[in-house]
Length: 443
Image 1 (cartoon, rainbow, N blue to C red):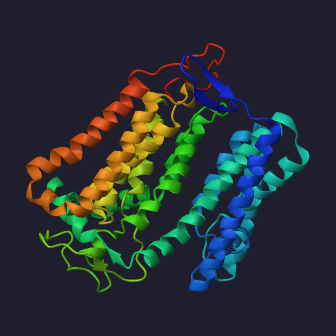
Image 2 (cartoon, rainbow, N blue to C red; image 1 turned 45 degrees about the horizontal axis):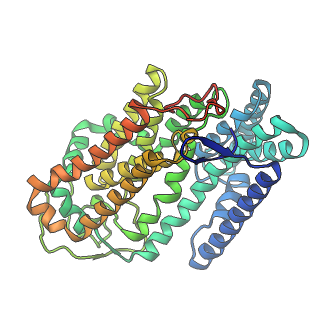
Image 3 (cartoon, rainbow, N blue to C red; image 1 turned 90 degrees about the vertical axis):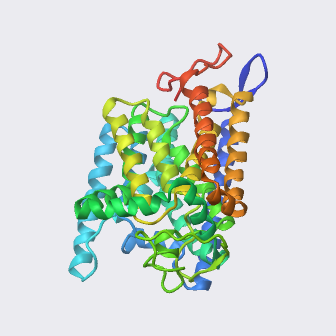
């Protein structure tokens, strides 16, 4: 259903967008993306690291940085095609990938894939925009647009990680680690657990951790199997990726294995993780190296895994179990690999619930039920970050008080989110706006 919904009291009516307005908005968005990519490329080239345009060029004719992301983007584009078109597109991409991968490998390069997916995705967009008309064109371009956004977002993310290093020469890990004492230092605990699991347990957790997009695509394809519902996982995924990295600049943190472990390149406080828990009540900003990304606060892996979990709830049993498995393994990996502190995970969960409150059930419009969740989640996330920075000593000294607050207040917020969108879903108040057949009320 096209349009923007406005809560007008007794009725919720959509403000319809004309075709001309949609085209203008689309053109503006495309120009903005191209301008941003170009600016980031110039910035990256001036500082000696790979820019987004260089990385995209590698996806077309070089060695793709990721084998799974281009294919995830192409699979998303399949939503807007017929079965015959899907077969042609996927088989063409696979054939191109095999040929390019073989040539690259025989020339002494790595054995990887992804070029075929990007080439076919681009070809689909050009062909749909040039040859197709009406609903067929619209559906195809929506799918291609989502797939392209997923790929381009990873290019933005790669450059942004370099920017976090430049913007945060000092990191706040000593404050975060101190606050984590109230939770029992879960990263240190899980680090020992992962060591005890051995190579098999490590391998499973590592695969789950790096292949998060695979789980996201499975859930998204289930949601999009019958068309475009009012809300789906891809929207949340992209918004998390857009909003979350802003906090890397505001709150630079590198993680326990770097600040307190063996991977600190000489900048670590000491080699403590995961066998010895430091307890220093005089924290200070820690100068760190010029290579390690400051990408811990909040934990976006937690945010994305929680989004997968939430969006799998309306699926069949196998999908619900899969979403639960991915969430549990992701949380275990983020802590057990020393990449995050426990308080990072709390902030990531609050971020997801806040953004889900913005996006979920758009047919209900904007009323007090949504405003209170969005404003409350934003305030809670701000309070968490401020407390980690300025109350870390008190949090560590009084865990009996601070632990229930750190866990209980976000839990109450999660309960309010569940009650609003899951337990007591409300249909749109205007009878003239029926829900689409493929969009359940509590989606």
